[in-house]
Image 1 (cartoon, rainbow, N blue to C red):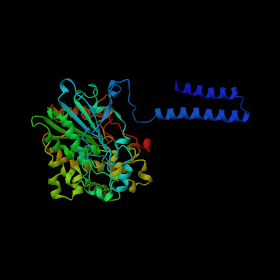
Image 2: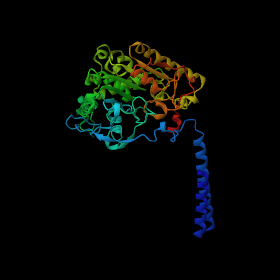
Image 3: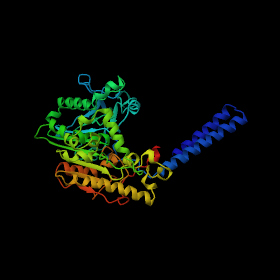
Image 4: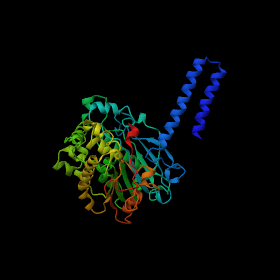
Amino acid sequence: MVNRFLCSVAGDVLSWCRSRQASKHHRTVIAAAATTFALFCILFLDWVSRRPFRIPDYSDPSSGQDTEWVHFTPLGNARKKSAACLDGSAPVYHLQRGFGSGSDRWLLHVEGGGWCGDASSCSDRKITKLGSSKYMEHEVQFLGILSHDPNQNPDFFNWNKVKIRYCDGSSFSSNPDNELEYGSELAFRGKLIWDAIMEELLLIGMSNATQALLTGCSAGGLATLIHCDSFRNLLPQTATVKCLADASFFINEKDIAGNGSIESFYRDVVHIHGIAKSLNRECIARNEPHKCFFPEEFIRNIQTPVFIVQPAYDFWQIENILVPPSCEDSSWRSCRLYILNCNANQLQVLHGYRNSLLRRLNEFQQKPETGVFVNSCFAHCQTWGGETWHSSTSPRINNKTISESVGDWYFNRAPAIHIDEPYPSNPTCVHMDRTWWR
């Protein structure tokens, strides 16, 4: 149908040339251009149709077509609480009220988006939606763990659901100690944003929660781990409160050149944002502050039950920890962006990174009330997308989707320790092709 449309467009252009009595030369040039355009579009569509990633089927209710778009709510007490994004604008969140049996149950999802570690990168960030609410879309679609569709989100579909937008560059952990150094250019208020949002949510009903789940993806998942116990302490002691971190178990591993790139970056992040006072006290007592930004160093001290969702071949960690741009050469360029492009030697390096991840998770998974879902997918966040959270094409381990595994853990239905075999063992994986985005 699309091909017939393009041919029609080309024909219309030719007819226009004749009707305008263009010169023979002009008709030839325009006709050639129209034909080239139609051929390009046909080849492009054919190329897209052969791409190895899956395009969601929106005729399937589980794909999220019917999931509501939710408008943002500016933080009402932002000025009073001195809570501000990097550029000084007001933080926002999106709230979808629960219904039925979910009316007194709350699920919070913390948005991710990396960090900034110096004045230059924070200044660049503050003119984007990751540093200013001025650039944020006013509505977002609630999919995956935020969906109100029981087919896509069977355990949490009717809960009160909140998406907390991320605009401080510090995993909601920065403090304004260093602001004087930068005049009025940057606001380091991540912890103040967190406290103000929690206060507002408590006032509008969360203080009566009987069940609650704090979740987050990437840098938002790190915020979830950092604030997990304090979140639990805000709610009634009779409430069931747990935390889920998705693609957030960033490990302190050297890159392929033997450099501690991620540790150096985290040292800068913790310093410029004044994060040390927001980190776990027990961890700080035994480590340099920046090391307590790594979950492996403080997760043992979290008292609230935690579930870790983590792809063993996390593309963000591969691109930024294992093979950062400073180490990239022509032999790694295509591999670090798409695992199917890796040769046997490169796969061995990636398997070694997976083994390091599993070693660091070993102590954690021995704790009671712990949940783990580590698949062998080349992915990053997997809980907020309908395709990866719970659908007919979702990644599975032991025939369980991430949604089913999380539900088993939260409601104590079954043990929830699921660890995949190494790549390429799992045919249900959705492997992200990052070359498409570069």
